[in-house]
Structures are given as structure tokens and as C-alpha cells.
Length: 63
Image (cartoon, rainbow, N blue to C red; front, side, top):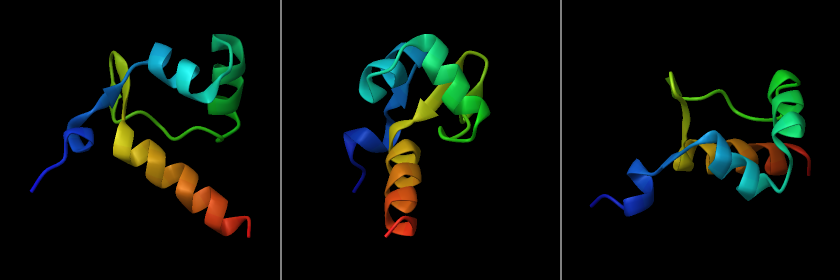
């Protein structure tokens, strides 16, 4: 059974809001590898589940 968040895509504005950063800070984070790459290149969009996995993996690696 699929969940609604399985297909939820995040735009740049969504990513900025979720991370609580400015667009400039977001692009600096992206360049530094602190943000996962987008799953759609044009327009750039992120799959919500992939973003959650990325940060969960980073959190567990930091333990």
C-alpha cells in the first residue's frame, strides 16, 4: 500500500521552509553536500521520502 508521502515532491521553496534557512544558505548547503541531490532536475524537485532517508542516514552515521 502506498502512502501519500511516497509521491510527495518538494520544491526549492518547500526545502527552504522545512530546513528553516534562506535560499542562499540552501544553495551553500547543497554545494557542500549537506542537501541530497534533486530527483527531478528541471524544475529541481526532491522526493520527500528521499530527503527524510538522507537526513536519517546522516543522523545515524553521526552517532
